Image (cartoon, rainbow, N blue to C red; front, side, top):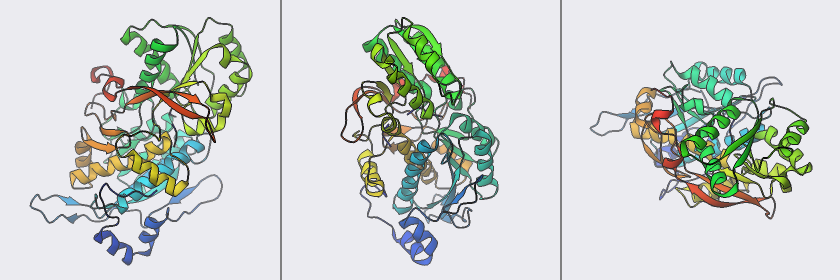
Length: 445
């Protein structure tokens, strides 16, 4: 699972709403019209398996020619499987990513920027890698999806990436574990989310420049936590920072009593506590650390404390903490203002990082299809690699060497807010500075 900030319908820049072709399709198909006007229809099975479908038919329509002299063709509709956890420990994060994905689908379907529509098939990964893999198989083999997006948990994302590696399927991931665009990379997998190495760049650089030299690392013993620790240590060494890692605590996922870890940190020489953790594990640890007075003894910096879901759950326990920050709704980057306005129109609040990822993973994939002029995943895969596209974070490519989105990161501090604590941005690390050099990733595509 990933560390991340803060989580409408949106028209294309300068666009005029639904184009003539889409208007005709809406008039001729009540199901599609409903999908464009609302979040679509949802069907649920009984407890133990939830199937949510937002497309009729679940198959890719025959392509239609553009009518130009290039010989390329564009599809009428493309089935995309969207895998997000809407149950299990990651459900709050998954709900946010799904909201963003729904807005991304609506952006594509209502915009004259695209010559096709997306038929989404939403599935619940249940925060479980085996379930996530089954859901990926279902949308590909039963629903006819040649595009899969999401799977924010690292373990689920790795399982999905392995599944698509030898199939004609393009997977756009919402997970952060470094292996996904590292040694476990493959040509069919792209990542919209900012990876663990990029996240740690904001954390480590700020610690070295602003906070102190004695650093304690605390995170869950899972794929993301291990990636985070590895990348923190790599960044310290690569930059030659005068930082001494004086201790590590890596309890199991789902730990409920952090007393022993908090006591060990409190009795150490640590000046700074790095918490590259997410979800319930982060929230439970931070609440206990705050109650024990640990947050008054050391500076705390995390990778997901900035996230809206984290700040909302932690309340005053988050105030004063620092966080590597992947997104903020106040950013004046790319088409973020349109995204924020659309999100507010639909959900009344402001979007956070998980919603941003959901929004852009759909749109980045769609822009690759549009640029390729075909829905053929092999052609789109080749087109996406190195393609500059507009996102809420700015103009961003998927690198050709590892298919990682070159996203900037920020460092922020949690401060008092009106309804919940807010994030004050302090500095920025550019995408080029945050991302690992290609030759150090271990990726071979």
